Length: 274
Image (cartoon, rainbow, N blue to C red; front, side):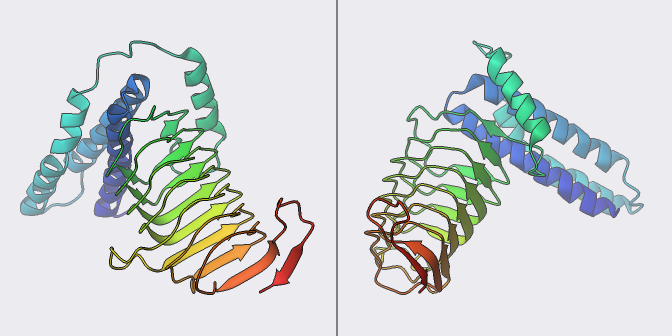
C-alpha cells in the first residue's frame, strides 16, 4: 500500500479518537476519556512508527511529513494531558458490555467509540463527532452547531435535544429517539434515519442560515407523527414505511411509500405511493 495512503488512514483513526476524547472530557466521563486517550496514544504511536519507517527516500518529503505530524497533533496531545491517570470510578460492567459491543459490531470503524455515554445535560455545543460509532448513549443536552461527520449512531436517545444549526453529513442513525428534539436550520446532507422516533421533532427552516433549506435524507420506518418540516425543500427526501400523521410540511417529498397516516400509528390506514 502507498505509504501516504496508509498515513492518511492512521491520521483519520487518530482524529476519531480525538473527537471521542474531546466529547468525553466535556461531559466529564472520566472512564470514557481514559479509554479514548489510550486509543489516541496508540494511534499516534502507529503514525510515528509509519513516518519513521516510510519507504519515501526524499529527505525533504520525510521532513515535511514529520512537520505535518507535529503540527496536526498539538491539539491531540493537549487533550491527552487533560485526562486523569485513572477514572474515579471504574464501572467493570460497562467495560465488559463495551468490550462485547466492540467484538460483535458489524460496523467497520473500530468502535463503538462512545458507549453508554450520558451527557448529563452538559453543554455540547459545537462538538465534533468525526467518524464515530455511537451506541446506547444519551444526549439530553444542547448540541447546537454540533457536527456529525461520517458518524454511525445506534440505539441512542436524543429526546428533547437541541440540534439547531447542527451539521449532519454522511451519517446513519438507527433505532434512536429524537422525540421533541429541534433540528431548526440544521444541515442534513446524505443522512439516513432507520427505525427512529422523531415524534413532534422540529426540522423546520427559518431562513436564517444559507444552504440549510434543503435536506438530502432518507427516513425508513420512522415515527414522524407531529414532526414539522416547514420551510424545507424536501425534493431530495424519501419517506419509506413511516408514520406521518400530523406531520407538517409545505413542499413535496421526492417519494413517500407505505405511509401510515393513522393517528395512533397502528397501521390501520396506510397509503401506498404518494
